[in-house]
Image (tube, rainbow, N blue to C red; front, side, top):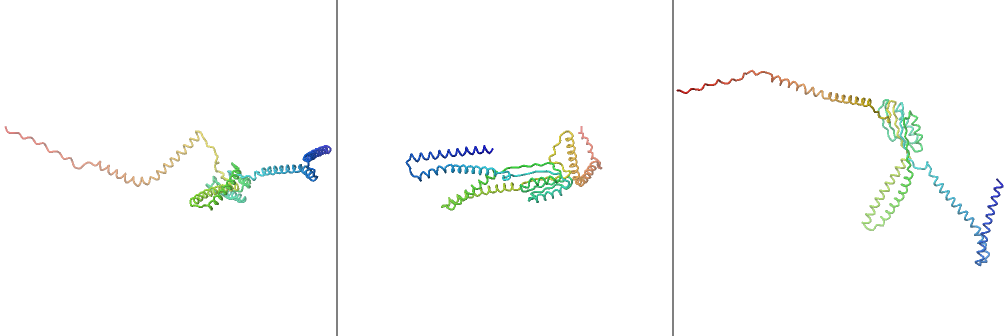
Length: 319
């Protein structure tokens, strides 16, 4: 290996010497043809010819350094430097919902987050608590794993959304809009008429409104990327799974129909129970009145009917 390296070095040296010799010969011929016999000029030309390869090497090194810097800049955009929104949903079955909810709150607090929402249903074995946690993005995975250990995990869903390009675009638009606002303000100071003043004020107001909207979007994205959202459902031992499949079939239909019949009968009995006092209060007097009226109709008349007088015979005329 040493002999091979020495041979290669010798070739490189010979090539370099040949190149220098050719360069010096060309410089000498040019000087001779032009008639320049000044020794100092020859020395400067030779020095320039000798420095040319060095300058070319420096230029190549600068270009290589620029390429390396560009490659480094492209490589700097790693996953941990991108703007990513993390969201998670999980359901854990626990023995004590209230105790698990307190522990979940403590986990989020230790991670530097807070509780964004807390909804609880029932207090028995079928109790369910839904908590919305906001935790720093770097602690997202750790918090999810800690919560999963509180009981028996039933499901988990993690989603990510890369908004790096949207963030960069918003930054560029905000910079451009700020420049437009500054330009409108400068033009407003130079207004010379009422018409121009009113027009520029309206234009400045529109530009400032657009800038405020862009800045609000940027703050919203910054909040979502800085704090991840985890929706946790803590279910008791008797709580039904939220993703239970709907059952079908004759028996299922029969069971549903029976339940509907029982519910309808219960509603009907409830209505009758509510109306019974009114029926008693109004129906009894009304029934007594009807009985009295019927009895009066059945009593026979005490006075007989008046008979018509007998017919009077017609008087006969004398013969």
